[in-house]
Amino acid sequence: MSVVSHEMSKGRSSVSKARSYLEIGQFWDTHDLADYWEQTHPVEFEVDIRSEVTYYPLDGLFPPAFVLWLSDGGFLRRRF
Image (cartoon, rainbow, N blue to C red; front, side, top):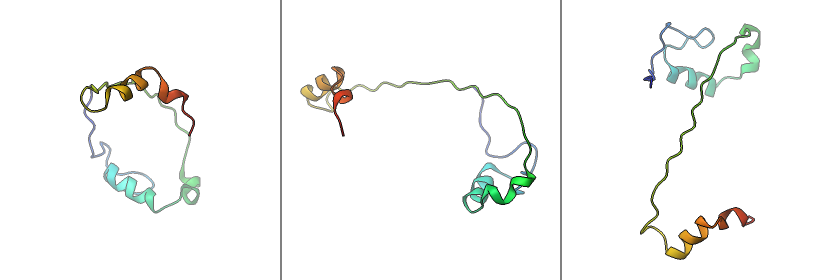
């Protein structure tokens, strides 16, 4: 598993001139990509997404009838 760094490896972002991912996020929170569209260019990259499921025990947290309702799929049948 790789460690994610908050600092960028190549210096600054080309559009925002930010030095960190936090600064990039702050820049795009207050700017619109449409204003910078002409400065962009197509890129190709791969994304490796690994799904992770974490199960937590429900014993003692909920009444037994509620746990039974969940395990029976009752929450899937309810309409909101």
